[in-house]
Length: 298
Image 1 (tube, rainbow, N blue to C red):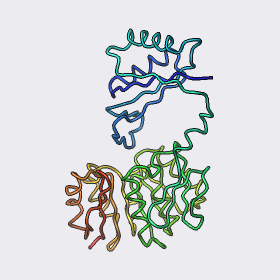
Image 2 (spheres, rainbow, N blue to C red):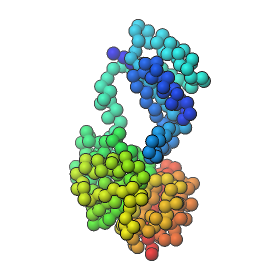
Image 3 (cartoon, helix red, strand yellow):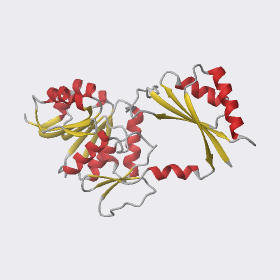
Image 4 (cartoon, one colour):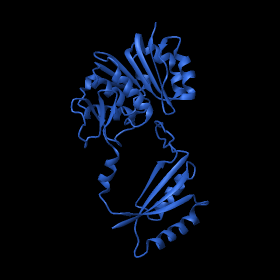
């Protein structure tokens, strides 16, 4: 069996209506993708954020006998429902094992010298390395974005043995779990999304982390006397600026801090919020993203 896939270059405002129209016309599935490499970070509860440039891929069972005729009929119908219709193209896809085809895109990734992020179905390339099992789709944050990679590489370079680590804005828990696998004694994971905390606990269990080694909190639940040897926060520049007093308090004197989720043009502004309390290292940049790191001086 073959399939007809219609691909539309849409936008944030038009995408929901276009998705509804495609499903109404019989699409078996509609997939929404980033069309301009624009990061969308963790949504608030009940929110479904979209990219400004949003690509839609609609899959139909190919009609017989003429797929071109089917395409024209679908486009004619869409033009009655969506005005103006965005740019589009049609693709004919041959049948394959779709449930396994997507897995080929996710391969083991190394961060630093020791740490590997591996999907559960892949054989670790270095059995002697430190392996973190994390399947794409189970949670947000798999190491593919430069901000996550910057934090993972930093953790891999740090002496974490017997340290208490706070992962603020934990998402999938990837940073906190990596810290535990790298030798941390305890991780405190904080996020304002209860689903993130659930994902963090699930991923910790998947990596055979003892439950008592990882504690999860909503921000308002963090104990007043909480502090850590290492604090890592991969969020956004604005929240990191407003969180500077809190993250400073959570870091013990002599403790280490790493911040990411910061665009290059925002880095100096964020660094200025932490410089009074931290001896900061030179800012590290990966593509347009940066990492700020330092040691608390008092």
